[in-house]
Length: 162
Image (cartoon, rainbow, N blue to C red; front, side):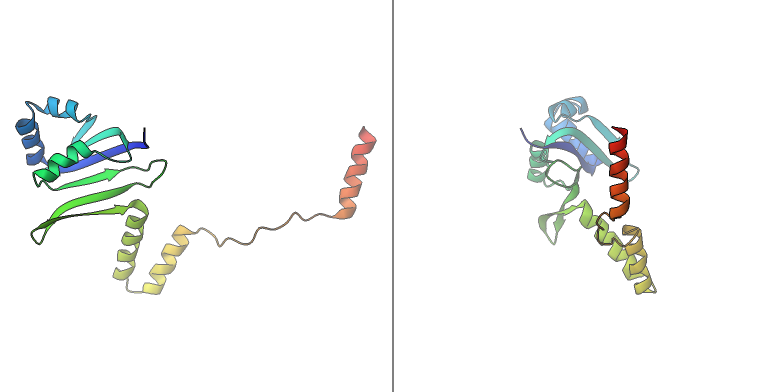
C-alpha cells in the first residue's frame, strides 16, 4: 500500500487554468482525475491544490504533466509514518530545470541560521535559539534514593496490616 500523507502542489493560476482546459474539459474534471480534495487561491496569483492519502508523498501523475510541459511548481508534503514533512521546488535555473527537496527540520535550521546572521550580537542570538529549543539543560537520570531504615519500617507496617 504505502505510507499515505497529504500533499499540496502550488502552481501559478494561469498554469492551473491551462491544465484544466488543455488536458481536461473543465476544472471539475481536472480535480476528479487527480483526486484533488481542496483548492486555495492566493493573492500572489498562485493556486494550491491538495490531496490526502498520497502514498510516500508522491503525486506522480500530476507532477509528470507539470514537468513534461515545463511548468514550475512547489510541492509540500506532511509528515508520514516513515519520513518527515518537507518541500520540493522545481524551477528553471540558468536555462535548465532543476529540483531540490528540503525537509521541515532543515527549514527550521536554515531560518534560524538566517536570523542569527542578521543579528548584531551573534553569540547572544545563538544563545537565544538554544534557550528556545532547550527549556533546560538535561541532567543525568538519578537512581531511586532509598533510606534503608525507612524502607524496612514501611515493610514491617505492611506486614502488621496483613
